[in-house]
Length: 300
Figure 1 (cartoon, helix red, strand yellow):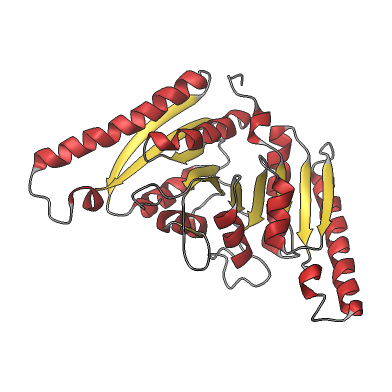
Figure 2: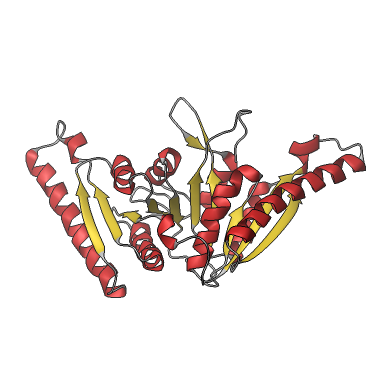
C-alpha cells in the first residue's frame, strides 16, 4: 500500500528481555514489527551490574553477566529461526533495564516490552520495569500483552481526544499502512466530565456532542489527506468510562495507539488514569505516543 509517509519514519525497534515468558513473546512481536518496518531489531538486556557492584561479590557479578549474555544469544537464535531474513543485533548493558532501553531507543526508536517481567504477579498487570519505561520514555513504547497478537486483521485502533492527538493518529496511520490494514479513530467523551453529574438541558448535551464530533472529524480529515490510500473510519461514542469503551474496542484491533500522557508525582512521571487502565487490560498490544499533561492538568 502506497502513501505519503514511509515506514522508516516509525523508527527502529528495540525490545527488552529479562528471561521471562512475556519478554520472550515481546521479542517475537518486536521481530515481526521490525520486519514490517524493514529495519533491524535490537534486543537489549539491562543487567544492572553497575548498580550491584558495591553490594555483591565479583564472582556473582560475573555470573549475572554470563547469564545475561546467554539469554541474549538464546533470544537471538529463537528470533532468527522465526525471521531468517531479519537483521538482529544483541546489546548487553551493565546499566539497569529502564535507562538501557531508553538509551538504546535513541531519539526516534520504538521500545517494546512484555506485559510483565520476572517479578510480575499476574498476566493482567504490567511489570514495574514496563511501567517505568513507558512513564519516562520520550519515544513510542509498545506493551505486548502475553502471547496475544491482536485480532489478526491488520486493523489499528487510535484513541483520539482532540486535535492535539494528530501526531498520535499519524503514528497509528503508519502502523495500519505497513500492515496493509485499516485505521479506526475512536473518540470517547465522558458526559459526566463534560456537563457535570446533573444534566439539566438536553440542548447542552447536543451542543457538547457536536463539539466532540468536530474534534474527531478534524483529525480524521487530516489523516485522510496525508494517507489517501488508507481506509480511515472515525467514530465518536459517549460513555461514563472512557477506558472501558477502548478496552472493548481493542478486541477487534491488532494494535491500539494512544497518546501516553504523563502526570508528575513525587515518585517521578506516572501514566494517566486511562492510559494506565489500557496498558493493563487491553486485548491487543498498546502503543503509547509520548504526551504530557496539558496546561489545565488533565490527562488521558
